[in-house]
Length: 143
Image (cartoon, rainbow, N blue to C red; front, side, top):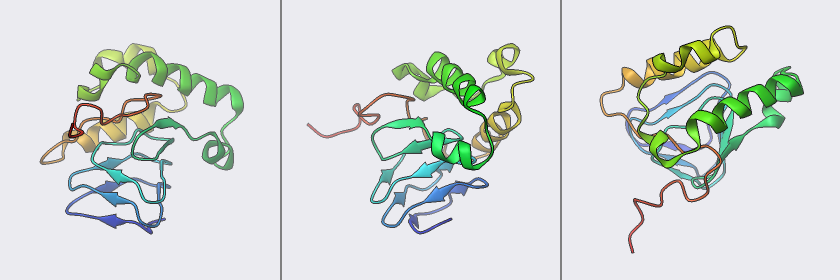
């Protein structure tokens, strides 16, 4: 669902929802099943199955439940994201090939691989929104 505004070339993956008033910067990638909240300004890529309000990135358990994902599976994805995408340096992650042994066979492996493949093909890649971190844009705000 798209109710927001895309500025330039953006990639919005399957089952992603962009709410009214959300503005996505050009070359932004929004992962499968992700949710971008109303009025958000997005200049970071949003991981699959997450909710993003322009500041905080969290697992969207409501959407996962609607997609038929079990609670235990959601916990598995949350643990993976917390381990690999919660540190500020994870915003610079361009590939997950080095992590492949940790997610091969996981229910989310194909979507995560597809997300990073699409990002790799973008002309000007955005940084990733940091999972679980408030103020994902801390280094970009004017003082």
